[in-house]
Image (cartoon, rainbow, N blue to C red):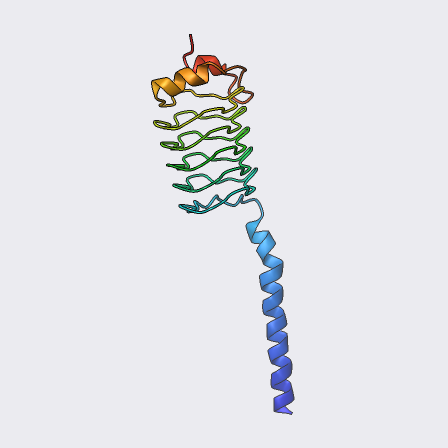
Length: 171
């Protein structure tokens, strides 16, 4: 009889623990937005990956291959793209505030309405990039790249309300 009684009690305890864990977890997390975790994608091959709409704040993509990847409407605040290959990537509407783009390849990259406030883009290559409405306020660029961008700059950023040509100090 005690053996049967022990089994019944063990099952009751297991059911109670299950109920506590699964019924209180949603309540304890309610009202708290999950924090973005900085992720390390250094030297990864991420060709044609979809990161759209994600919060990748302070993540690192140094030396990563992101050709044809979708990073549209993504929070990339403080992200490092040092020497990353972003050729033909979609960064439309992305927030690249304070991002490191030094030595990055942004060839044929879609930067439509992207916000690059305070980004470090020395030695970045923007050949053929689409920058309609992009905000380059306080971005550190080489003079030749700035001049190249001024040739195609147009539009006003939908988030900041700043004119692309003005943020690049185009004549």
